[in-house]
Amino acid sequence: MFIDTHCHLSREDYDDIDLVIKENRESNISKIIISGCSKDSIFESIELSRRYEEVYLTLGYHPSEVDVVTDEDLVELENLLKLDKVVGLGEIGLDYYYGKDNKNEQIELFRKQLVIAEKLDIPVVIHSRDAVEDTINILKEFDLTGVIHCFSGSVETAKIYTSMGYMLGIGGVVTFKNSNLYKVVESVGLKNIVLETDSPYLAPTPFRGEKNSSKYIPLIADKIADILGVNVEEVGLETTNNACSMFDLD
Ligand code: NI
Picture 1 (cartoon, rainbow, N blue to C red):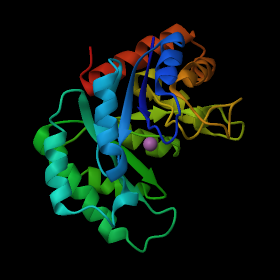
Picture 2 (cartoon, protein in one colour):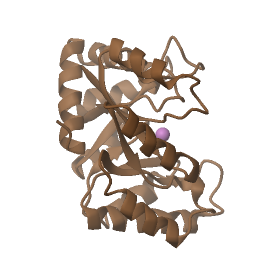
Picture 3 (cartoon, protein in one colour):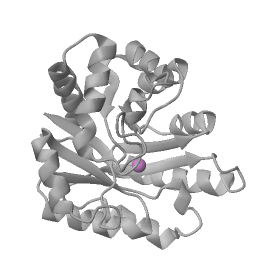
């Protein structure tokens, strides 16, 4: 059995969500944690978690939402985070890929949400793109734990995060031919890894470029098993245990 610890689920991306859930079951995916991280997706994510037993969720405002999120939205977010099946705050973080023009605003939104996570004592799911140094320095200001979603950094960075108590979310990128992520997997080992697809984005090989889905989690697990020289059942078992302990799931 596997858990997809980070994906996005919406009717805009999938015509038939019943089918997505059915295919997940057929692929041994026992639970998925969807990320409602924009004004548009938060309420749909909550609704889907009520409709499907295996759907859990994290809620939070992605850095790309920085221009539209108000302080009232953050008060509302704090209340929504107390709902049943919400297992963490995210994805939140810093994204300097498109430039640093709004860097200070991003940092402010990030910090405000980390304060909420600390107050509620829940894990965080971190999005960090071209912003390693700031992300690490800001997380160090807080007493939190969580997952570095879609980790794709260096071995050195991986070790900093794991020493701070964070797990690394490993997804389809590990299957890409030119990816160096195998070095990270080798160095941190199964005890620091959770599986994720980030679907509908970042489909693993051989579906790269197509629409991703949680049903492809076994392809990611296979690759990790290959890298570590263990069988895929062990990858499933250990990463599922990691996800359950991080997000307080049964
Ligand atoms: Ni995501």
